[in-house]
Amino acid sequence: MQRILVVDDAEVNREILREILKDIYIVEAAADGEQALELLREYNRDTAALLLDLNMPKKNGFSVIEEMRRKGWLKRIPVLVISGEGTAEIENQCFELGVLDFIHKPFEASVVKNRVRNTVDLFAYKNHLEQQVERQTETLKKQDRIIQMQAEKLKEAEPFRELMMQYRCAIMEVETKLKVLNEEFSRAYNRNPLEAIKSRLKTPESIYEKLERKGYPVTVASIREHLNDVAGIRVICSFPDDIYRLADLLERQDDIGLLGKKDYIRFPKANGYRSLHLIISIPIFLSNEKIYMRVEVQLRTIAMDFWASLEHKLKYKRNVEDAEEIVGQLKACADSIEILDYQMQELRNKIDRSLG
Image (cartoon, rainbow, N blue to C red):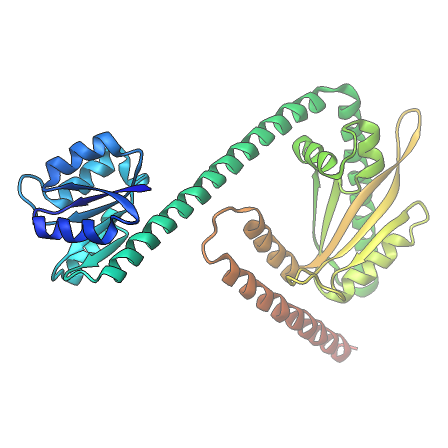
């Protein structure tokens, strides 16, 4: 049986509560705050709940709660206040201090039992979940430390640095091709389809984590064979049709091989994400050899890119308040962006037709 501590300066209240709870719990009793703290010092590790009167001689209930907070006992022991005609202001003050519930006078046996049982069970469940979260957090920290250590070893390896240099060269080759196409397009149509080009190399930590997650060996050969997104280029276009036109022109380059294509514009992800993804193979020319490298190219409009940046923050931020509501709002925004992109494209077409 679990132990309950009843603290009230009125003996009759202590005895009534003892009688109600004695078949379920071991009931200890104290007549004032000082006695309560003495019992808590002895039994704080195996006390399931504290039923506490506020108005007592020597040391009142608020002082007991404050002492429990100072000693860290509130984290282990739920407090239910024994209340007479308490005002809303007093009850709010108690809740702010960490009180979980109230037992009102006159006592109704079934209500007292249910309130105490529910509080004890919910508090135990809450502590269990918090302990699980702490264990999971510690496990994640250990995994992060392992990944960091392995990534540092990977980063220091000469073959890895050589591979990263090759990916950087591949990015420069693709960027050059895109800039040339943009110049040609600008001369032919008197406007630029490209708004911006952004590039990035995957970090050693991210490379190591992805290989581990997919069950591949952490080697340079494995990176080259199994990862398509080590080198990434994001192409920001003005309008949706510019995306497809530019992608088509890029695919037609005779030294580029198309290894994969995912159209999340015509077929958006469930959360609203829209972008055109290409995995291409492109040669780089080193001093003594030609090597084909893989590059991931993502093509988006300005609005798609703005949406994806915000969604990325939500995805990788922990403990975001109202996360589900934000996800729903982001989906609605994605739908609005799709409509807006094509409306703007149609307005551009009308302007072009009016200018002959």
